[in-house]
Image 1 (spheres, one colour):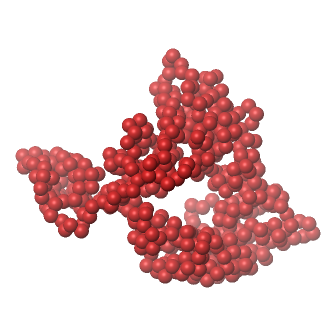
Image 2 (cartoon, one colour):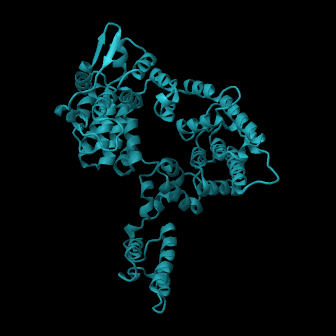
Image 3 (cartoon, helix red, strand yellow):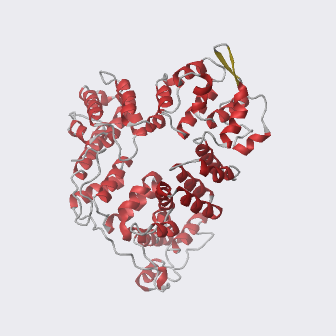
Length: 522
């Protein structure tokens, strides 16, 4: 409804400077309603608010003004999966969409779609609004919308992120008409079987794409990345957009024989020397004009904590494959970190190595960085996310301790490391839940405000097998409002997850069982 944008403009500049727009083109009952709301005897501000309220409701319902060409408002395609109708489950989904947290929102939407159901029309606006507010939630929202939801999204600019080709469409249609997520999925699928064909498809499309989409789709080359991709990636190193250049650098870093890596090595190798068994590192004395060809910025950002020479060194380090350091020095990742801690350029090295391992994951480097004292390591959550579950949980088990004293940090890091839909193992989840329950039973919630937040996070995060320990936490006769809310939110999340776990397959679903091993669903 374009009338909404005109109303917004009036609200921004003020009714004293711009009158409330007439409902031009709004024929029929809706147009009559807007006319009735615009009484000349009323204040302009009151008229604007009433009209905006009516138009807002119309937008959420997908209203299109009568009189527009028929092809401007095509009917929604028929849905192949049924809308969920169970009142208890619908109430849980509605509450999750309204109150969160994000993990619960993702879980209810993902389980719904996996079981072959879609959201009923009454919940579509709430789901689309949740995706508008939180970009990380959008893939789960799109999966649960159905055809009617995609039709509705096309009628509202705030929901355009959900517009795309039908989920049942073939790959060519999803590429030609789909959203950016659908197009990246098409590329990733083609990369598995026909990497050259996918690369050619992307190369033909890149010149017409905006910077954000160039970066997003280039990232799909990570699937089946090989030497044949180097020429296309090298050409993008001169892209005007920083995000594109960064994506390309991270991909080229995974090709240790690439010309880009050899050029960075030529800059970095002279700075690293040995005197007997002792290695020494220097930083560049001056910027090299050739750096710009490899996305290395000579100008240090004014807000950056590194000095100028450290800034140059950090950029070289973050673009060099980590295997180069172990091969050249003969030192293990742990020994290299010990060596760096004693030198003048520790901050530049640590920051560069952290970013290098995120660009091209290496499990031994992840473990070594995570084993450092907290003051000498980078971001913990992103590093843990790179590790397989068994190696990840070794760090959590150590941090948790025998008495569960580290439970708050473990929950925080696990929340960062576990992707939506993923959980810690059942065994570790039980240990975490036991430690949290013990803290609640001894009264820590009364004064520990951080623990209250951790409790809700854990309720949304932990394996389903651990939820009974959080389902009936002890209550006190007298509770502050904050404490009461924390316990009520925890109970609400636990009830919702346990109920959603009972969702059956729809009659139209072709799946024989739900793929929910990470959730521990029966």
